[in-house]
Length: 384
Image (cartoon, rainbow, N blue to C red):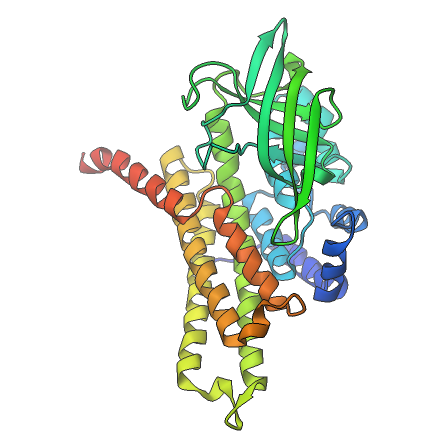
C-alpha cells in the first residue's frame, strides 16, 4: 500500500519517537507501572505541550486540524514505548464523543481534553455484556428534566486518573435492544459515583465503576436520547483503528528485539539466528507485522465512509491484528525461551499488551461474526 504522511504528521512522529526513546525507556516504564499512581501526569502534560492531545481535532474545535490518521501516527509510537497514559480513553473516545456533541458540550469540555487538564474514561463494558454495545443493564431513568443513573461498568481503562466518564446507559427498551441507548457525560466526583481501582495485566490501570442514583441534567446527554448506539459504534470503530496502530508499534519492537536476541544467543557455538527454522519464523513475524500495518491503514482511511464499509474495515483490521499480535507475541516469547516471560525482560511486556489488545472492543471471534453479518447485509446490494 502506497501511503504518504504529511509533513506535520512526520514531525509529530519524529518528535514523539525521540521523546519516548529519551524519557520512556523500559526501566523507567517499569518503575512508573509499579508506582502507586501508575502513570506520570508530567508526561501527560508533555504530550499536551507537543500538541498530541490536539492533533486529532479540527481547527474549528480548537485542534490542529487532524483526524484519525494523526491519532494512528501517535498510537503507533505509543505502542513502541508501551505508553500507559490514557490517550485512547480520553482523546480518542472522550474526544470522539465530545466533538460530535453540541456547542455547549464542546465549549465546556474539549479545551480541557486538549490541554490535558480534563481526562475522560469510556465506561461502556458491563460484566454480562460481552462485546455487545447495546447489551446494557445500566439504566438512566427520566427524572424531571434530567436523568438518574444506576448500574455497574466493568474494566473502565484509565478510570483511576479520570475526571469525567462517558457512560452508556439504557433509557428505554429491553436489555439488548439497539434502540433505547443513550450516552452521558458524568463527573467522577458526582454524588453516587464510586470506583474500585486495580492494575491490569499489561501495566495499565482500570476501575469497576458503580452508579447509585446519580443525578445528571439534560445537558449531559451527548447526541439523541434513545438513539445513541450509532454514535457509540463510530467512536468505538475509531478506537479500534487507534489500538490497531498501537499493536503495530508493539509488534515492530517485539520482532526487532527477537531478531537482535537471536544474533546474541548462542547454541552449539553459533548464534541461534543462524538456524534456518528460526529465520523462517522471524520472517513470518515480519510478514504478520506488515500485513497488520496495511489493515490498520485501511481501517483508518475508511472511518469516514458509509456505516457498513466503516464497520467491515474496522472488524477486518481487528481480526488481523488479533491474530497477528498473538502470533508475533508467542513467537517472540518462544524464541527468547523461558526468560521471555520474566518481568525483567521487555519482550514479555509487549506480549502481554498485544494479548490484551485482542480483547479490547471485541476479540477475534466477535469481529469475525460481525464481519460475516455485515457481508451478508451487503450481498443483496452487490447482486443488484
